[in-house]
Image (cartoon, rainbow, N blue to C red; front, side, top):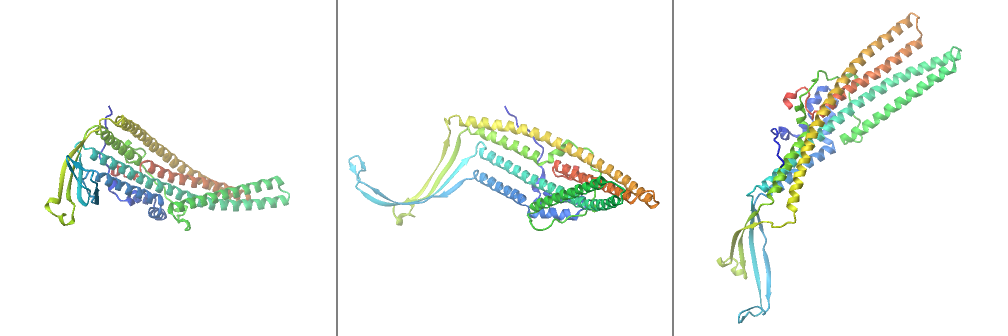
Length: 445
């Protein structure tokens, strides 16, 4: 026998309007007005968000359709026909001659299935849980799209900065190549050194082309998010980006209770629990109250006479004696679906914990790497300045200064990459935690 689990009280999420799903308060912590403007544009224009909202509205109507099955039904179905009878009708020795007459039949018919066993109520509850699943699917769409868009946004800024740095490196390499060629012409180096520097320059140009390709792909992808195929993507400059610091280093497992997939599975178990109960009640008899009131006459001039008034009422019990095992199979099917849902529920819990832990690991690693890259950049900057000082006193050549600056810019690229990785890791953690403010967990859980 399958036992039904108990759940915590429902979250007030469903009472929020859709803009709350974007959780703008969280994104404001990045202190980037361009990001906020783009997210608001995403909220307004994105077609996936619009379709998610339509799915919720569609299922709200399905709930209303099912609720209508709990109510009495009243309909009017009038008839007007001419009855032609032959003389074949006979009552004992008396034979009715052929005749023709009109019949005016105008009844109001009412029927109501008495929900003694609560079957229709359970069906409505089941549909409401299906609606809750769709609502959480809509919320998941908001969290996923806003997170993916923001990650692309920061990657686009990263690519812009990489192109700028790459341009500087290419310019330095061109200067180096020119000086090496001058040395070759004066016989101070071999042709192999010239060819080596030319190869480096071609490789640097290839890297720049790769960055440009990545930038164009990101822009096109973000235009699809924003449902805008023409406007450029407004964005911040790299130097104005800030890092989110002091995020909690560990979280309670309750954090997964805010994830949309967790709430979906929870609602699905409740839905199938209602379906199992409905399947059991299908074995019980049904009772339908019916009645008619109206007019029935053969002539228009007597249509509203007292004798033409029509009224009848009664109770119609019904019970399926044999259905070929359909009801038993249906009940077993629902029980199996329920057990499957329980397994998925447990799997969702484990998956949620894994993703949150993975997000924490990625964030901690990215934060440490960014701090180390800052130290390395500072050390390389000192090295570069020392080479410049040596050049000033004649202890180093101009080429040595150019090489040192190239190395500094290469380290700068690593620092840029680690900073963006740190930002994106906070987005991944936010997404894995179900789109809640990671600084105010007690308020959101």
